[in-house]
Length: 176
Image 1 (cartoon, helix red, strand yellow):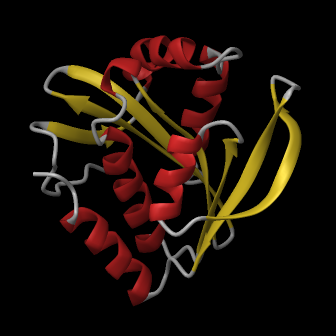
Image 2: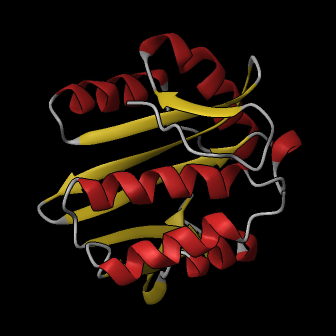
């Protein structure tokens, strides 16, 4: 699946993650996280994608992979498993573009809610998720590296016209 929407970043495209993307995905993962996912974890997730239980995308600007993200499906819920942007590309709208694609996919799949965990110190990500209708719903103590807490966030009603209007407004308000 590839999303063909107008983008704010010239030549930003997303496509379905494949095994051939893993080397670069792992490079980004290792830059961002003290305990990055392993090649085996990503391979397992890609196998779940074939079964229809997951979806992962990668984002490119031109020929450079600049980020990736994923969803896990459970009943009517979509769980954002990860959303990662190369540090050189952070703050330039890549995460917003990937969230738009993931939100539209979850909506189109018939999900009624999305959830995620975000590090309690990652205020930039929390603000991004709030724009997409996520609200805090709880805390997972010592979730990250057995020391940092995670905020559990939920967005309900993603199957409604009102939520899709929110998505359209986010798209329309992107810088040109």
